[in-house]
Image (cartoon, rainbow, N blue to C red):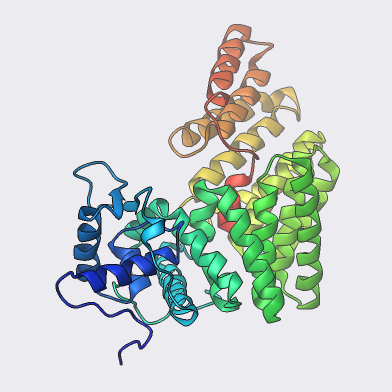
Length: 420
């Protein structure tokens, strides 16, 4: 069945079709203009959109926004174009934005990397025109269309399309945690408001996680205060729902903030509570990461036997067949910390601890961030200071060099995708 709100255009470009497309594009002034967004906004085929965009560029309404030779070409309105654009009537504008929001949901669903036990809050609609693409292409489209995503979210908020608002945010999770924290925080804010207004408890907990995580990754005390309140709110909802997995997430988030603020005992308590909840929920990725955090917190508290126990348990979790492909990276972190703890349990254990740290560092070199490699180098240097001060100095210099090129805000910030 045809869409009665779609703008009609004949097979060949003409003045009426160009005017109709221009009006549709004006509904989303911050969206990237290319055949994808043009086809969706106007409700026409990709091929028609491509022809009409070229024609509008020839007419001086659009200017190319991509270098020559790049395909597909993206455009922007020419400086004098707004005065020449007529506005769409309200119902047609709403329909165009609805198509854009549904298309964005469909595209984000292709970029979403599944976490065990995590199902989408909102299933994407029937494949729109053009059809969604595979994961890699979907991610590339999103990278080039941040403005389009923001427009879709704003439209969903404006028109109270709650399931679209929190559905897009939910699917955006792994893309937004990679590179775009400002948009992530805004998406989480819109998604959380939509879930609250819809009264959807499952969506509310999911959006609380997204909102809390977006602020946890920020370096500002204000954001950490807000994040703490959001994690505590999630813990309250998860406890009421008897959701052990979300209880673990809330404790893990609170542990990250406590760790960042150097409240080590609080961090240790939350890490262990997260591990207990995730163990009961049979969620090895979470249990392993929480035990790793508990082990490092115990090291900082010089509770060496306790640290070794936590880290041994973490290694067991990382070897669970259900653990994602990154298990060797996290096992290496645990081995480094376990070796560090061993060197403080008696002179007879120092050689064993040094070997464990050396092996862990070798495992980290091709798999992990500079931050954790630097930590391993510092721990090794501490163990070698008394017997080989020159080597210890060399290792510390290597660690300093690595930290200059490390972007991670938190020691555990790269684990949020895994456990959220």
